Image 1 (tube, rainbow over the protein chains, first blue to last red):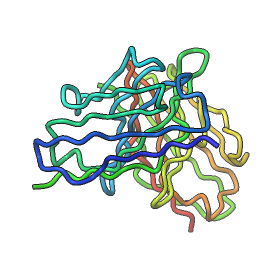
Image 2 (cartoon, each protein chain N blue to C red):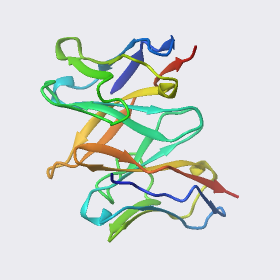
Image 3 (tube, rainbow over the protein chains, first blue to last red):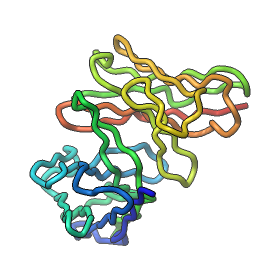
Length: 122
Length: 106
């Protein structure tokens, strides 16, 4: 069974840092790109960042560019998100998701983890 | 920047057909997928590559995409289909979600 389990969420002050982790199992981790997607309380889904299979290429939403860094350790089958200079508006449930890809380069997320909650508050 | 627009809410009677739209400039030139999210749960993929159903998703879920609009159609809607639905596409290597549509079955 494919499983993604996030951890590392918690409460941080504005300007502070947190590091999220996502442990993968049930599939060949280094065959897939991975992404982080967040959902603020009562709000919609927002893609945060994605990384390709070997960590050589990544992308970020404009809202987090320059503050967040995505990485992965294929030996540990783990995905990470280093979150610096946190803002109140970063408060959200953060999900990791496996990227599936079609032959024409299109992508979709499946499955998703249950998420880890990040609260940024003074 | 590219944007996807969904109606905030759609209502349907049990057994009827629900249609949820997702609009964007020349969206038909891109691939769209759809997610179902029930309260307190993670999103679940119901349609990918415009009109393909993952294994385990009921046949009553279907999708289309043409022109500026992608549509998720649920035929013979059941009470269990009440949920939030999100469309997703990619633009310039960034994933973009629609704002979400709350489907009410009443």
